[in-house]
Length: 289
Image (cartoon, rainbow, N blue to C red; front, side, top):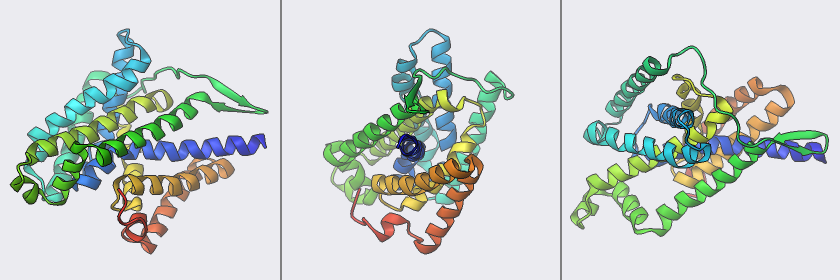
């Protein structure tokens, strides 16, 4: 029984990890159809925000939960105003521009912090014993935070005027503009929100993964696989993709080790997209958010 409980927590953490790193991308790509290849670097910047803040005496929780999303959200707004706003509707151009932005951010951070050694932050919560097994208390905290973050994003998009206007603008920008909506401002806010969620994820994962200038590459592939496998629905698709792929990854990793777990995740995504080219929510839950 203790082993089953430990396995369930490990699988739940794998699901939460995928959902956490994918949610910001789901907002930007799912709503705005912007292929943001700098998504991993937004996560990386969230991690470095936590590192710099804690090294200067800021409380770790304040750095992770407030400063990381705030700093990366502001960076996202600046990026949208200076770069992305000129490229809406030009998917290939956006892909190339964000790839260049990714390389630029890696270069800047490398010149400041160096590239050879991962910068670490101490894990703020210790282990919890379950009979003969131990699980990380911080992993359980991340599961809880992911659930709360998903609920918060759902509430903003579904229950607020801002969310309604944002969804309407993404569906038909010309009609929204004719009704008096400042579509430019809505695009800016939406991109900034997606960047802030990515920064929060990067800050929360910093104690688990450490931070390197190139760590974004480990995030972005999983994030895109999860979002594309989930399909068009922003939250339902991300949740469905995370549950399926994270569950498979967690089970295989528990049996054979983390390397084969990553391979199983990739194989499962390939099979899923072969059977459901439009993703899970392209086949099911078509009208969900």
